[in-house]
Length: 226
Image (cartoon, rainbow, N blue to C red):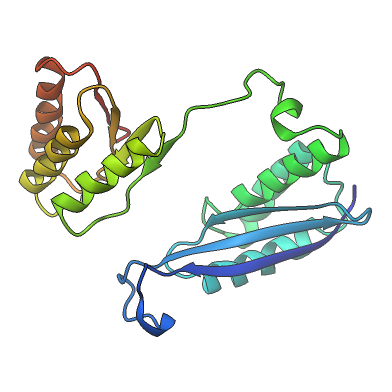
């Protein structure tokens, strides 16, 4: 399972209804990502998408310049060895963002499961055939938009919804969380991921507002990753 080729596609998902496919600014709602594909000498391939920050072209070129020469000629089954060698190489020479290696690692797992002639879930041990999944918001433009999206997520069969509030004011963010809870009802799990916009007192205010939602008889609760 010798890695023969590495390709990276630079991709952009445009918001619905975007005129002419031309970007207006870095905050126009587009989502940048890359797709990494590894191909072995025996013809096996695996692909996985990954985060690209604000520029898939920039992330793609930087990743390709580092990964192509590093991975070619290596045995895809030596997944742990490759990881440790990459840590050293990246620390000394490449300095890629921490998210860059993720798609490569997943591709190596996929290639190993193909080599074992097993689906990945079974190759990993086969403990579960299904796992609960949640949907995560981006930063939306209104309280109503969050509530509507959360309800759509619930109705689509997801197990939870994660709110990324704007972080402009804690008062607005609390109102968004309350509106989302009102929209989905008491039994649907919600998560809050403000991405560190608050000082201590603001964070405490939001936390206590979410805590009140639990004590008011709602069975479900908010989980706060940050």
